[in-house]
Length: 215
Image 1 (cartoon, rainbow, N blue to C red):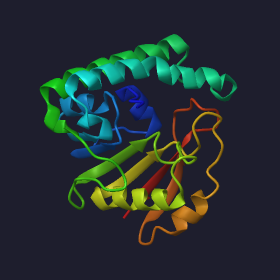
Image 2 (cartoon, rainbow, N blue to C red):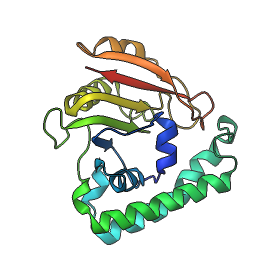
Image 3 (tube, rainbow, N blue to C red):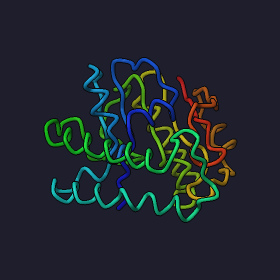
Image 4 (cartoon, rainbow, N blue to C red):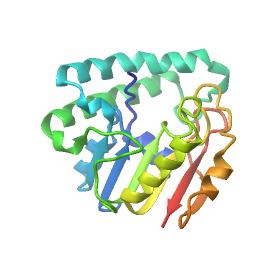
């Protein structure tokens, strides 16, 4: 199991965030530090991920072991990544290590913020969160999850969102190929407005757009 730790700064850039609303869901959050930082800013922030079912010691070990594993994916596809946002591999590693520390500290003191669950069925009532964020699951793993799964997952994210869903990125992991069925998928989301918006973040070359769903 890979449990990636991304920082609040990465989330700000990936999702083009400024002021956060009163409630936010991060799905599926892994070992990100976003929820801890958002909660410290007074936001009703919740993270959901299947990894949160793990016993505490195993979760710590999995998060720690995932840090070098994610760098391995980058190394394997080195020509498909750019460094102008991070500045250097060392800076990326620094952000990820700090995010892992923030996550592990927060999940120990506020476990209620970290809910076990996975798409396409989330353990939350309708319209529970003002904003729902989802990074590096949908579309990233389009070689593993098919169009029907993506449709069910997007509908579920919309169900638990009171206002808006943001999904990043819109390309497959590794080489960053486009997701062929994305246009057809968006047409299947009845009653939902879909916008593809550029963001101030790029790591995979060309992966600088997010999907914004409103209803």
